[in-house]
Length: 199
Image (cartoon, rainbow, N blue to C red; front, side, top):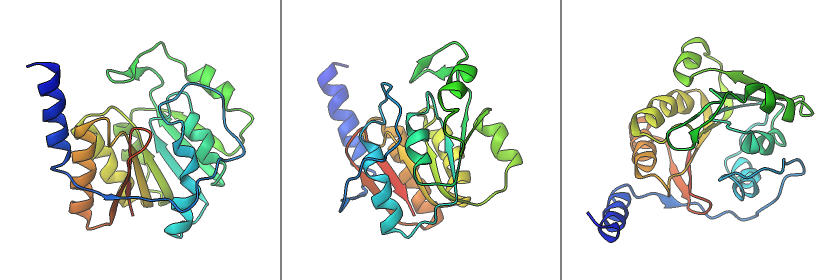
């Protein structure tokens, strides 16, 4: 199969999972950010708009897939507590890496409302029954992983966002199916690789 055919097939698959486009009224850059390369750059500007539009409280936030914590620090501007869960060794989509938990922990040490937990999401969700105001899922971009982690996150938060709905059709499909399964509203912010929003 040639590249053009692969691209056309991916686009056709994506449109099987339609999402209402999220149009922010205000884009705002949070005060605290870290200067690292991240596929999440740009999405930090839409978070406050989402919180305001859906009247989300700002106490607790959980994030699955923190990588080097760009999004974690961005979210820490808006919540009293942010928990970041990650293996800190990468995956097949972000690239495998040496364990960088200690180094990443030091980089976010100035932000005392961030707690990093080195764990597989499958192990973590078995032992946490906390309700969160906001959740972010940006783990390995498979349908199964996104759906399994996402179902827990949607059931344990008032608003859950998913990165890469424009880059990975499997993520888009999982987010579409999660909204259908839970009966919640679904939006998609199509910029910066896509951010699915279930609320």
